[in-house]
Length: 372
Image 1 (cartoon, rainbow, N blue to C red):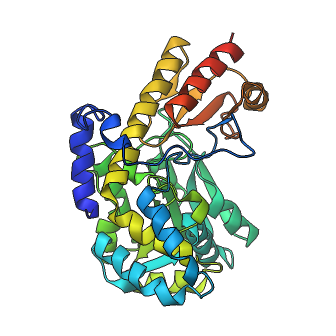
Image 2: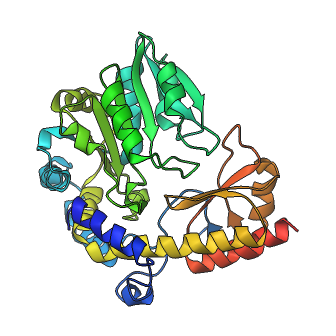
């Protein structure tokens, strides 16, 4: 199933009630792995890192096991096959693709590429910080533009910050930690117009969880030759956060510049895992369906407590507690529930990742106890 087919499936699933369309989560669960066995996190609901508790899939686990005999080799021996597979999935030639150690390495490579020698970047605040802090460490200046009243990107305010030193505009869409999604037409018009002045970086780590009909990836603009970079990851819907593999899609000349600043890259086992993950449509559907189910459980808990929250387009929910996050985190940890870190300036808000239904029950009981 290619990217377009998966988007059409997700749209149908969402409009049909998600799990109901699938015949319930149990319709897929028979062939899927149990939630990741916890070791040092025994009996702890780990809901602080936006991970997929069900992955890797059985097929991917078998591919990893089969690849151990090649783990003594450098990744170059299996690299090309994944490169071609990703390019085919995205509908571009291989010279548009940069494979990275998770999307974080791609973010940092872009921060280095465009932040050196006094480069300036523009981003929403709060948003995912890896690129921004890394660029600042290289001497860049980052304009952080507060999110709007709906906690989404304020594109007009971001545009107003553009100057002669602006080299890159970072858009995390859906946004982390707020979970908001930009209007597709507004986003596309912004990127088409502003990419003539600076490079647009579209972080699409959570793209697979979007249920809005026909929501485009900004890869469509890369295909038109625009100054746009898109990052994607295998960490979320595919359950490969621990394997560290992702990729960038960009015009070949931009991709070459980014490739020159990639440092660690990835490894043989991660490459084989990613190759199989792209083929495993059953697990993809399973992950999306379970995420819908878990989000509904989170919403119910927050509704019961009458706590405000932002409707999410991701695998986490951002909600207002009225308590400082540095007090709430240890209080929840005492209830064996780990929740997200501080996201200034929203210190009275918390980010909770989706997990198994067992995790959601622990969250429900823990938060209700902590909130009194």
